[in-house]
Image 1 (tube, rainbow, N blue to C red):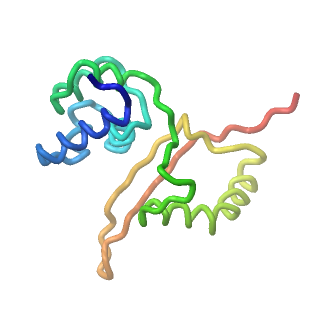
Image 2 (cartoon, rainbow, N blue to C red; image 1 turned 30 degrees about the horizontal axis):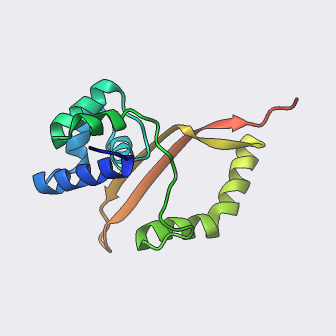
Length: 149
């Protein structure tokens, strides 16, 4: 019996490794972006019934796991307050160093508000470079202004 979303993630990763799949291949089966599908399979997003069943078929998941994929997860969970995984830590470092700059420039351009992480998209690409390939990440979120009341 599958008793948690974390257990579903472990089942998915084990099947993905066993089958030698890439996230892009999984995304094509589900009909969504590789970024959203990876986030969902890692326990951060919810899938509808059709999408969850497609993942269940692809990863050979039990019915309980398919049901868990349709339940809203607890989002934003990391194992430690300050990430220790080197790649995730670099994102933490980017926000620590450039967060105030990003905030200042967004407020200067748009006014007082926030960038949505709900009405949001992300695109991760490899950018060839003669000095070593680069990681290109495009984050796009709707601007939500604070309202006076």
